[in-house]
Image (cartoon, rainbow, N blue to C red):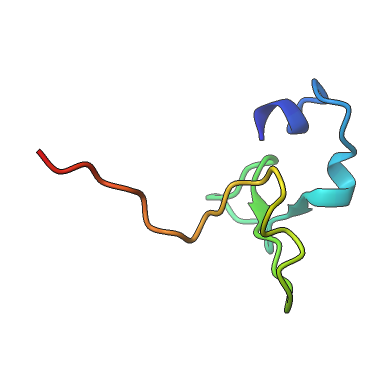
Length: 59
């Protein structure tokens, strides 16, 4: 995300990143909404899934 936001990668950020919903004190310029679709268009893309549980290692 850092590289896309700061134009380090050759990816158009306007195509993939949507700004946050509202302007409040808790928001900042680099807050984005999650892409949601009714199909698995981004399932095998290079974007990580953000709503899957983090894998935990057991000791």
